[in-house]
Length: 403
Image (cartoon, rainbow, N blue to C red; front, side, top):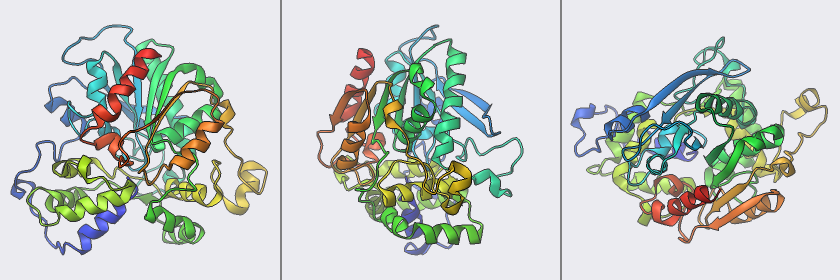
């Protein structure tokens, strides 16, 4: 969801909005507009659990959302467990935004899986710490996806396995949700034994060939951008706010003159594919996104683009203090021994075919390697495409059954 920064820039400038209408004045909006992930799931008649304040070793408090069973099955002890991990600036809402007919969380729970959805530190649901206040303390935001992968994800996996009594689970990640998995299993290889199958949707490790213009710009000036952000004390990147939610509703609904602009800038995030975008759903997506992240997450990706490496955060001269070397160490992908299924596409502006090929060549246990047949399939289509079930999810379900 990185390119949403551009969407909001357009909303605030091009649309000329000075006073936003109340929710009730926006006509023809989807009933899920303005709802949280919990409210969306409950509105569809499904059971959802919220597991709050799962504490990490460094004091962050994370929330998990669980769909234990569907409408066509019941709560049964010992169900296979699926853990879903979102991308940057996102949350557990990604997996349910499009409703039961389109979103993967519903399809998994109806297929008999016990579905858990994670939330990384700093997003809407996990913006908490036992000591630091995210609104006041810069220390709260002193993390990148290194900490999400090495601390948050294993903490949530351990919690899920304990709650369910299982020894292994299926892991499905999108975008940064794949990055954090590769960090976890390379830094803490014992977690490979807890994974039945990892499904990587739009996998991101190497990034030197991506086409997203916003990230390319940040990458070219990432050192300067980092200095400016530090100087200005900007630690949080695109937090979720009521103002942004209202802007999305006012400018992207079906009767707005600017809906076409919303769609066009939406495609600047991850590639053009108007045939697979249901424009009515944009305000639903924007209700819960952007969900917030640290600026260091963005800068860490910019460093990846610049270096053409998959390695730890570059602290500059402080690398000697953090790593004992001037250059940050690479992640050792040979330690990722869990079975991995890679799903990638030709029109993904954030996860390029060339970079995915390099990743696949270094992973020792790739068991499924699928190029989506639609040549226009983009980075966000993995979550929101009209035909995602036919193009990808049916195959994904068959992978889980096989493993």
